[in-house]
Length: 434
Image (cartoon, rainbow, N blue to C red; front, side, top):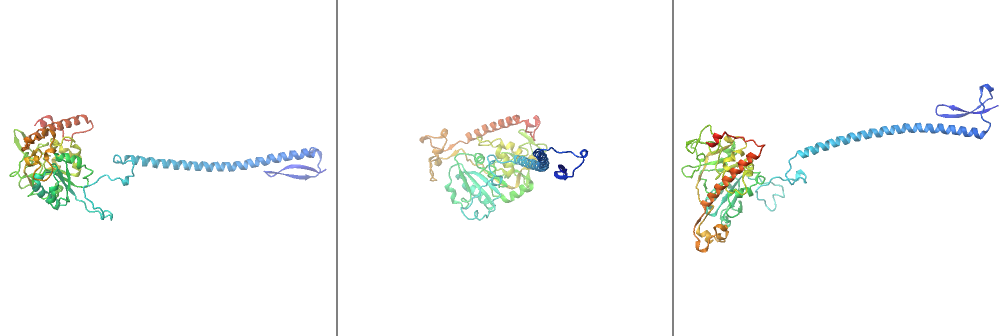
């Protein structure tokens, strides 16, 4: 008898074999019901097919998982690297010093400084033809009474390629137009203010950052023996951050011996004296024996001026007392970086300026401008019967002394309160008394 047997065919499949009749002991007979046999065989085959499909699918699943895992690891590494770069960039950006208020702008568009150069309304700027800016600045507080003296000063500085800025403390501007240089100069007018009031408000370090030197002079100086170009060459060679031209002792009013010209000398940095009011010798380390200039004609490097500007007090407009502390802004040793230039010297004429009004000014006569009486502060306004020459210089000097005491007090308090500041010129008590 032939029988239909289900046998394993290979590893993954089954086949049908038609076998010859075998003996009872060597064969296994199938159920007699054909439907049952067919059902069992189909069930077995289906199970085997499902197992094979599952096995094959699991292989692809594992491979896909490995691929995804690998990609995820790469993404993690990339993200980590990107985060690291961003953190580094963030750290770098945080370390950049940006001007306050410019944080919302890209750094390349931020312009931190400016200058006092007048620009044309068309032409050079549009064609990107940048003119060579002046390298130094002369700033003066002036009144029309001294216009001839001022003219002599300005003419010399204009020829040396200086920018000139005039602060008009008497409110008169039109009468300066007679001078050829007037349209080149910058004019600022506020009545009855000092040059230090003007300087604090109009000479911010970021505005004058392009100028190597700032000459902040009074108007009553004779410049017959002074040349701005030669002066700058000397202070560059000598490394002077703060300086002044010496005063001709034969023609000037000299208030401090250190400012007097030394004959046959180019520069001096200290003075010598042995008087009851104080002694100055080679061992002296403090102003006014060394490291000191007077406030009538100081010259600052732009680095020194940035420091000095911050020291000037807003409402202490005479700046008395500041001269004794200028050495802290000398960008180093004040005994070396502060000096008086002897070979280029001036004459201090000591003319009365602020606080003095004559009768014509009080009446507003002689110059075609409005009455100066209306511009007087209320405490000194006069009744019509009281018009006469008015000299308030004593009141100005008294106010200057008051301001000096205030400044000294502020300096002393600032030193005590700033625990991080170290005084590079701290002196023993005995030296300070001397």
